[in-house]
Image (cartoon, rainbow, N blue to C red; front, side):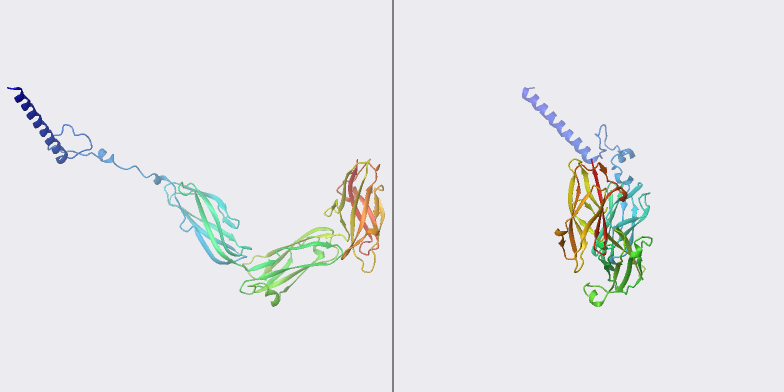
Length: 406
């Protein structure tokens, strides 16, 4: 056989092998099912069984959220609508655990007028629920308002739940001004002050009781209280007002020197309007006053400080007294404690003001005086200056001194 004949034979045999292999591969791919693994040793007609283990191997993993708590608030917001300014309003929110693990709840932040009632923390089992009450105090609020309170949870998808309320607050009553302040009262003079109680409620409101609240106070005997309805002309200056009262406080002569505090309690015939409290405060001063550095009106004493014995000290202040119509107010030194304190009244330099007279007073601690200590808190432990005057309201004046000479 020639070389060319042998080569042709080999090529023919190789071609038949390739064609045969392709035929087998086509049959295995298109005629037999595949298990997902290489098919080895399969003969045509042999059935292929997919086991349960094999079928389960393709199942997706369990949902990770199945074992977590989940908080749900069906209605996280509430609108009270139109409410009155002197009331307290409450709404209950439903909070549920719709997850598959215990849900913990605890208080978070809240706005200034929102209070969560009877709740600080709780744990809800799956499918359990709790009612949480929120109270809004509308006192002194006017117009649209929004408030909130929050709950902190262990729900990883909702760690903070906000409960919201809103309302349109309409005024029911208002006190103008909100407190009565007597800035300066002279001990033996009469003083009066007033506030107005303005009513905006549509139905009539009547004051049933008005009194001072601190009944045991020593100032009570010097205070008088009265009230009367406001006139139509007075109400016209308050848009929307339906009524009102004028409340007058009269301070009688003799109230002790120093600050005083009281409260007026007003009760109406409206059961949903809480009793109103109106603070009353002021300061009673003596018939005379001191103007100048070192004067402590609260203590009623002149502070001279620590004085060096070798140099001494001198201070000038102004003595204020009420004017005497058609008469000159005259002041003169009477005595001092200790007696080395020197006092000079410069009567010729007196200044006449609108309703008072200011008289210069020079207090001198001379060099070489002392040593001495008059820094005590009680009157007995302090120095004193006594002056005599021709004023009927203050025939004798005592000025306390606080100082030390080293």
